[in-house]
Image (cartoon, rainbow, N blue to C red; front, side, top):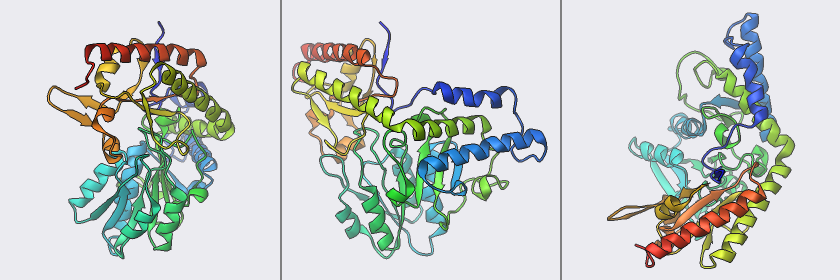
Length: 383
């Protein structure tokens, strides 16, 4: 039986058109973009084109986009960069309790270096209440960093409202958009953010490339020191091969987003409907309306996620909890949502993609249903 990939939120395959865009810079155009001769200028043209393709997708200026090694670096640069550049204004940062570790761990690092961090709670759908953000802002607040869409449950945050509140109080706004770009429209002006992070491998580009949008006029302390690459923002010779891939990936999204979204929604909804018929006691997590079109977080009460995964024969998915002999490790997202333990410990994440077919969903439902039923037969009362 052919394996079925339902873990697109973890990473995506490289789109064939993206791979084709990269090939000339693997075999032929190897020059350094900083070199003035023809070899270097061909490489520089590729980097400039990629920057424009990213900017076109986000609706910003090309010189507001810097290329990075991925979403983690982009988040680090945004948060650490603001904390260094605006330290004279204050030392308070606000984020949410459901952020990716690439944000949470940065905030924890800064707490050890004299910064105060407020972690906004979320409701049972994993959504931030903008009113609580307004209450949390102080004269010392310099940055609000809230992800656009959650990687585990798919809940989409009210970023435009969050940005408006931040700006009304003289505070910068950053959004981690690693999961939203390529699945829903992402516009810097509509979101109102000052900084925005992208991860290439979440949108059918290679691993090891990303981008950071920096609104004109925003100051950042450098994260990478060296020569003046990336308009002086980030030292290090540009990754020309993968930049070309990221640019093409963004162009494909700009041209085909509606179709991608329709396919992902169709297969996600089909998965949930058919699983619901087979396993009526399952529970879908995340916001019922404001949710990514491809993401399905499903709890199977009183079962262990690891056990279900081990029973799957050919479906690739992710667990929301890890069960060990003496404890259950629940993800920070499910904890923040205060999901009951018996539901949280049996939570799986399925995420469809632009290549997912209806036939794959039908076969996946059978595999998942059998895996859940096998887990119940061996552990009818859970842990």
